[in-house]
Image (cartoon, rainbow, N blue to C red; front, side, top):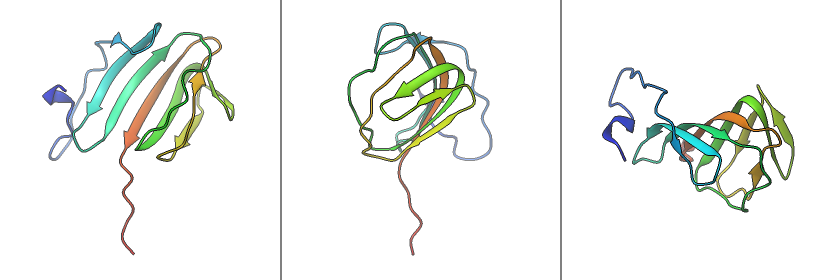
Length: 114
């Protein structure tokens, strides 16, 4: 993990959104923005058209905002401007019919006491 991807201790931080790297799957490009040891991760993700991936779950809250193109999972289809929220442990798999670019945020589940 690069030090510049951690959350700042205070204030604001400008993060350059260039520097795409190959993702885990063919046709996938990732631009990591935040990758903090506390479990906060934010990235831009470009995926090529393709079928549903492997069934999986995350141990964090997953938030997806579709910037362009289309995205689908076992429950619904999403287009540019759609927002998807998945709670930890939600099993899912996803794909795209024409390719898409998404903003993805992973955050630990933290519930206020009381």
